[in-house]
Amino acid sequence: MFYGEFEHSLDRKGRLILPAKFRETIKENYIERLYITRGLDRCLFVFTEEEWKLQEQKFKSLSFTKTEARKFNRLYFSGASEIIPDRQGRVLLPKYLKDYAAIEKQTVIVGVANRIEIWSQKLWKEFYEKTQGSFEDIAEKLIE
Image 1 (cartoon, rainbow, N blue to C red):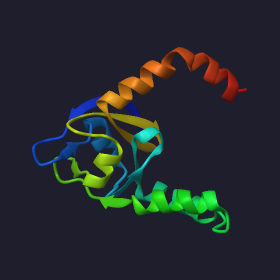
Image 2 (cartoon, rainbow, N blue to C red):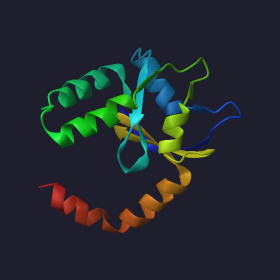
Image 3 (cartoon, rainbow, N blue to C red):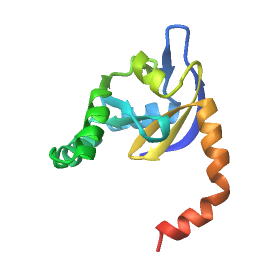
Image 4 (cartoon, helix red, strand yellow):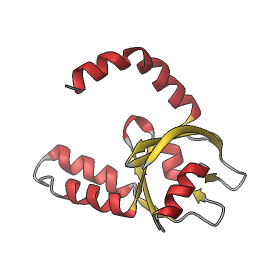
């Protein structure tokens, strides 16, 4: 559903405009609201409402008697916020999430099939440079 890599800046009010391709997908699929939360590797995860409910069911089913499950759910769900893009496709990122992801002004917005990831430009470049050379090795380990 969401694919590609796009560089965007926050506007002076701290809003981020979603890439045109993502806005089209949202419109074509009658998506009204999105959910944003802390992602892995210090990025932000953005889900459609439908995908958010699937993720929620999966993580709610983790046993609350397990310490790691409690920690993960606390961080994941306490960081969650509903966001509704305005008519221009802009969303306001909560300050605590911008702080978590080290987002100041420049971002990279990445489509990862069922979710959107929002990265600080600096952290995305670091991640990309560190992992691009091992792409084939990763594929070999994961894909049969």
